[in-house]
Length: 298
Length: 258
Image (tube, rainbow over the protein chains, first blue to last red):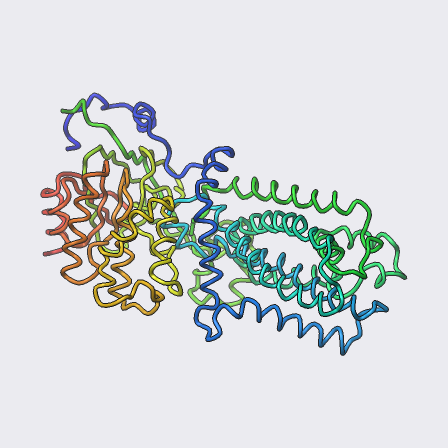
């Protein structure tokens, strides 16, 4: 076989590859080509996220009921601690504070779980990465999508809570859709960034819960930032209010709760919400793509 | 004859290195981890990151229509080499050039034990890059081939309820449902009972006809003799021999003392 003379004898491997149109295996495709490949895998991304979601509760006796029961119990716990015991409402009427709190918890959990899923997207699925070919960004995006579907179940609970405390469906509820879309873009970008960092440093999975908890307390999940920081310099409250988690929470509360008017929103809030989403989504995608050929190494 | 040989895979001085965190002392203790962080910046060995040099400078050229067997003792780098050819493991040094996209016959990692066999067929197909229409078209063939439903309606049960043999059969059936340009098979022939083994060998011959080049890793010299016309012998990550099946196998059998 290999000792048979050939017209290709004596030329280098690279020249031989070029002569027959072979390409380097596992090389990173260009950005446009990468996006095209992702589009080709859209069915896989969706199916994978749904499969993960279903697999989560498949051993439980109540099965998929837990998709709704888990956020409901979560809301109950926060209501018990912050609503009844700690009185963290700071002068907010009860029928505003309870939906305010539950919205905050659910919206922040959406970002938090997307980040946590992102950290493990590559490092926790090395088997998959080493066995099959697909654009690796499919994984973090798929996990972010799973969290979005999880949030949609939580929204059912949220609607019930809102109505129970006197905020009835109105036109402003339609604003929920753009808010969710923007937050999803933001979360996906964040998941992509942390997927690349988590692939290099798996220790992030241990560290991130603390970072996320700090972020949660700084974003006003269970209190109103301007009210809480009234006796501090104004710029602290401004900075906290402009952070993306607070922005998306406030917009969602504004859309959903009757007694939470636009006076609670920082100026240019929609532009900031859109800016964060575009910046993080695009930046995260490019950042993740830059290391595409390196995912899967030991 | 020589003029018509078209290369499909070229490996050029290929090196693959795995890095394992915290394996220096084998204890993985907290102090070891701490010193690893403090010594960041210094070289890998000092930080307790162990390197495993799995493939060391392997070069070969595979041509269209060849079926190539990969042999060697356990841990000699056969599976690693296949993954590198498929572009799934980044090379430390050297390059692999391929014609189109080589695929590894392996879909296990995409499947989820908590889902029904039915959903796993769809998920596995999508993970391999098939379209929804292609999967729908082949769904019945996949289920029939696996023989999962021969003993009742098992395909609608979660995969964790399957026996290990049944699960292996379903996995192979899903993996073998797609057509490939350059196909790599990693000891897939060993799954299932005798009847299923026969069926899967026939399927592999079929796949070979459709694929340009086939790589087969196996410890079964008989199945290598049956399917391959060229053999690469790897030992400790180095290419020890490359030639016609009989020649290499004879040397290999002397080496292993068979």
